[in-house]
Length: 302
Image (cartoon, rainbow, N blue to C red):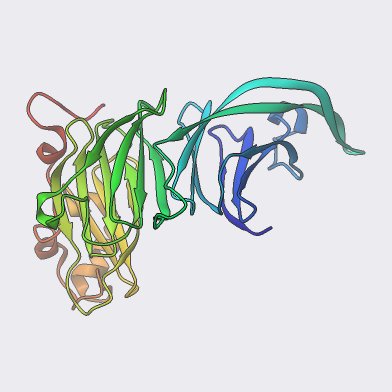
C-alpha cells in the first residue's frame, strides 16, 4: 500500500497513517522513560491496530487534542470517529541490545461514521480535510463538493453545516475545500480555505461566516492549497497554486519577525507575490480584528 497521510498523537505515544488499502494503521512508540537517556526519537514503531471501515483510500487523519480519539477521512466520501475500546492481552515485544524489550498489547478501536455514506449510484465527494476544535467538542470536515460540516466530537452526531449566502447555493465555498484549521484558543472559530481563492473564518456555534479573506489577485493561480493559524491565534498564513504565501493578522507587524518586516519594507522580500509593499501599507490590506473573532463579551484566552 501507499501512505497518504501520517499524524502523531499529542505526546507522541501513537502514530496513525492513512493508506491506499482503505484502512488506518495504528503504531505505538516506546515511552520516553523506556528509551533511556535524553529520550531520542523512537527508532522503531510497532503496529498495534488496523482500523477498518472505509471503502476507499484514507486521505486525512487528525487526533483530538486529548489524544484519546482520532478522525479519519476518505475518498469514499465519509469520515469516521475512532476511540480506543480495549487492549488485547497478546503483546508484541520490541527490543534491541541497546534498550530493554517493551511489550505492547494489541488495541481494539471502535468507530462511528459521521453522516450517511453515499449510495453506490451517487457521485462521491472526496473528504478533503478533518480537524478538531480546540476543546475537542466539535469535529469539522470539508469535501470536494465545496461543503463544510460540523459534528459532535463526542458522539459523531451532525450539528450543522457551514453556509455562506455569497456562494449562491448555500455551500461554504464556490469550489473544492481542502484546507481546515481550528483556532488554537477560540473553540468556536475555524478557518476553511478553497480553490475559489477565498478563506473564511467561521463561527462554529451558528454556522455563519465571521469574515471572508480573499487572496490578492495577481494572476489566475489563486487556488488556496494550505492555511494555518499562528500559535497565538492572532495571525494566519495562506498559500496558493501560484506559489504565494499571504500573511493575515490583527496586527501584521506583530505577526512578522522584525527582520522579515524590515525586508518587506525595504522591498527585498515580496509578500503574496505582489510588488514590494511597505509593511505599514500592507497591514490594513490583509487584516482581521480581534473583535471579528471574539464578538461582544468574549476575549482571547491569556
